[in-house]
Length: 199
Length: 250
Ligand SMILES: Cc1cc2nc3c(=O)[nH]c(=O)nc-3n(C[C@H](O)[C@H](O)[C@H](O)COP(=O)(O)OP(=O)(O)OC[C@H]3O[C@@H](n4cnc5c(N)ncnc54)[C@H](O)[C@@H]3O)c2cc1C
Image (tube, rainbow over all chains, first blue to last red; front, side, top):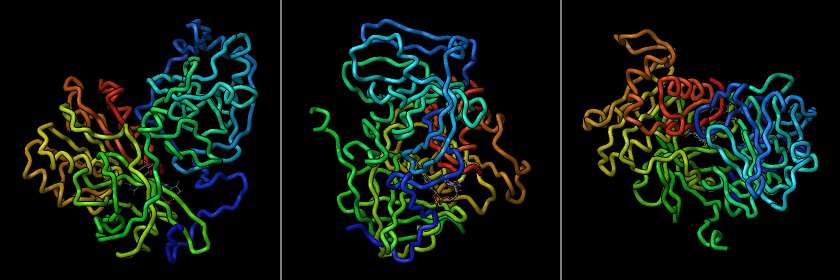
């Protein structure tokens, strides 16, 4: 069915079982964002979870740093085709942030400084599946990679791992975020190659 | 289910190379026939898939260079060869006229120009000029009156894509300006030494923030970071600056 390109050898071949379909390995850490990189002073940084009745739970940078942190090593997969294996992050598990939050909503909209949004079902954020990370490779997270803090949801395409994250809003129904509105997949599972709407 | 009714599945389509031409020694334009192409907006891209005889396949994204009103069913892509690159080397040096490849799209609804009335500032680094050229061509097709400025950073004069066409469009159209920044080598008699894009470049050759231009910045990641930071520092509203990062670090 697919068209064969005679003489195309493929220089980035890798038959690793940990590489999702259509992805290739990179050693760099490319950047994908829709606009300029926001610079957020730490004394103004805040992270807020808003539940479905509008109740807010907020942390300042200092309070956030005092929460128990975890070191995790995960593979990340960007919809622009690169994957990076064994990346190391330090951050707070979403389980910790949601510990005292009671909600019946199944969906969330994740917000970032600069106005970015992306939707993630709540169950994809809990049970050790997601973190708000502030260190990458042992160093403070660089602004172009989402610092001071970004969401890391490694089992979904990386656009779901909102950079410059500043909050999560609980939703009763799933709604598309920024890239989802622009035609990207509503869920974004790299193993099912859910890149675009309808995949 | 209302959403499903309007959503369109992006299926892989067979595209045939109708024509190919070199823009520079290392960038080639592929004119592709794509039957039933749904049309596109300037700034959108396609995903290209190549499959080796043994079934191995690789995908990459390429911006559409042609404007929305291009002739008939098809798109033009302009591919800069990346040394040692897997897909770009094949698209530039391996693919022949008449041959087929697979693509799907158009993709992207944010980094697009929709013929809005605001002035436009385009900032290109290297092959980042491709989607911006689509915008310039689209404006030409609709005889847009919006003033357009392109600031185009290249290594040397020999690396300029679309040089002849840009010169012709600037000559014929008082609403279009192009300013080149040469980072390694300038043309003879050029008033400034070779060097990177600076605050002064974008201050002089961009639009003042008061004009509230729509800004599109495209190129290698580090170029986009630098240019977008400068524009924000000059006072442009970050929400009006749209960026597309092609990857690479040069
Ligand atoms: C939305 C989008 C639109 C794009 N549009 C265009 C376009 O119109 N024209 C075009 O020529 N390219 C475009 N690109 C870049 C293109 O998708 C490929 O990344 C590029 O052609 C290199 O692929 P490759 O397989 O040849 O190299 P690979 O085998 O992927 O990589 C080879 C090496 O080059 C580095 N590298 C990867 N990309 C680049 C780059 N862009 N510049 C310098 N080094 C790089 C990699 O880190 C790697 O070390 C676009 C990218 C995106 C995300």
